[in-house]
Picture 1 (cartoon, rainbow, N blue to C red):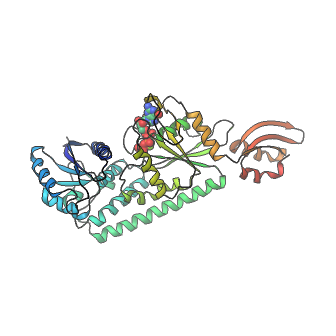
Picture 2: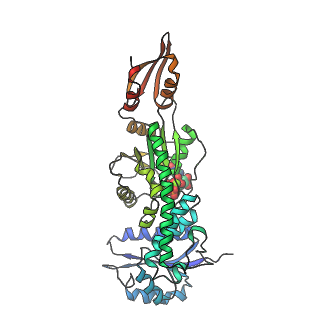
Picture 3: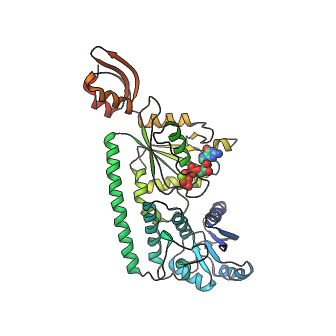
Length: 415
Ligand SMILES: Nc1nc2c(ncn2[C@@H]2O[C@H](COP(=O)(O)OP(=O)(O)OP(=O)(O)O)[C@@H](O)[C@H]2O)c(=O)[nH]1
Ligand SMILES: [Mg+2]
């Protein structure tokens, strides 16, 4: 039986908003439990600024030292990213495994990664995280065998890795991921040439993004297989794209991707570039918010990551989920669509909002298509909304809603 590690969680409250610090340390507890680490106690210290030596004050370090035996602790987990020297100093002073929030998140990603691409991306992020900490790193980050970080595959971190090897591995991983990204670009170019708009689901982890994908795919998708949706942090690590088309409506591609979290290690954002690139090419972004567990913090965090990805000008719709689990609507200032993935409430409205955004320039036109151009009629049926069809003597009369691109294409058939 695997031994359950016992941890003390430590957060610093230097933002003057104690409530936010509490939320964050509770989330850290959830992250730890994802890796089967038991939280024995939580400690918040209020300080004006971070202590550069130990992150927390040196008095607190002594206090923790006295708790280690009493609480039978195996590790201390800090709710912020520690510098290499802080890691080293804390380890020296406390003689116990020291872990920070970034490391924990990276471990969860490593555990969840299933596809080749996700494994490469996580591995790159882990190595980028380790590189500046190599000198300060001893037992803690290189721990092998036993306990929660019995690292395998992408989670593997080897003590003997020197900076040189690590740098080599980082450039190899970047090269591999670059190749994948290029293939991706080709396929997204193909999509552009087919002119099917792309709608991207983004938001905090566990918000309900994959559930929206499953709802639409089941009702209106060509591929009805479910993507993985689960009440857990970071259920999705890769990108899935599905074609969605309601009867008599033009289609769109819906993409689902990895969720975000507060204090997401920057290494992850840079290494997940190819996975996140789907968001950057989207025509519309659905910002999904967990209706049960929502906070301004989560909403703002997603916004700031979207800004970092350079998509601040892409049209956006705010979608709040889990309507079935709440009695009153959440007090969010912006306009939003309130849905339930379980009962289907609000989903029609969401579909309409998507259509209105991606086909906003569409108008109704009448066309006459010669009988020998049957493929054009088929294309209209596949990609536009056909309102009426009549078979006349000299061709097929069609009334359809066309977007500007389709209009330019079929101009000569307008009647
Ligand atoms: N009751 C209820 N549960 C929901 C709703 N939407 C999602 N859930 C549940 O919430 C949990 C998380 O949903 P996911 O769709 O996996 O969330 P996600 O945003 O894809 O999460 P990550 O992949 O971790 O980023 C799952 O257990 C879902 O079944 C909803 O509208 N109502
Ligand atoms: Mg998901």
